[in-house]
Image 1 (cartoon, rainbow, N blue to C red):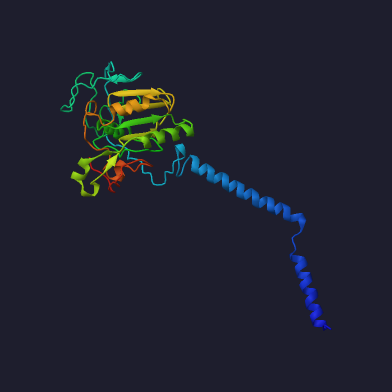
Image 2 (cartoon, rainbow, N blue to C red):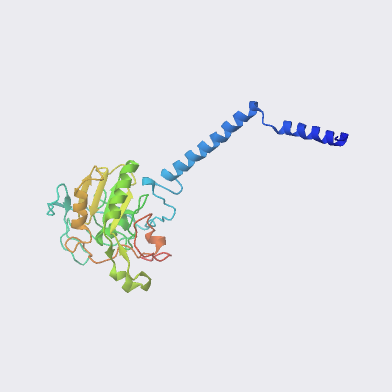
Length: 289
């Protein structure tokens, strides 16, 4: 038969368990509060990974590793309006400008797209640019989730890149299609990089730039530009896009400085693309013009 002390302990234990038992009156609100916190956190994660400030941007691309090419500094230059000419590529809808005189000394004829090096911002006569004065240091080609300096992108056009710009309000699904389009393009060897820097031996790049335009001033939602040529489209699946790339990218016929690289620039100046940059990591630091 249990003694009185055992009975007291049993009674205290029963009372303690009764105190710890959840009461339905406050348990349900507590559960609802926890669920609400989880839902809010999930929404926050979704927003952070689909766009806006801080790490990820258009098209759902993870931009954590991205470094934008540095802005140019120096006196401003205004580009003289280049002369429109008839396109001879045979691709429907392609616009063309005078590129006569290439390769040349860097001095353009009247109406010809100039290719002088300048140290500051350029006001271009064509939106987006199809050539003209540009910074002496190009950007590292690839996919960027934010606008890039025009003056560095134009230099990649001179080296044979295709620059795809799109309206900043283009639907995410269409941006994703543009990224996929860039990814499908073949890699092109950049032999000259390995000759300049042993760390870059074997480097390849798709010779493709993709970035949103800084405003809604584009002539169409999506624009493909090469040196002296442009194609304006409304859909990322327009079949002319591939024809444009096949014709003008890294072309011995249309590229002013055919055989030149489109990356290899120290990342503090040339940037690091969010995706589809070169196959070999570019050096750190900054470049001197």
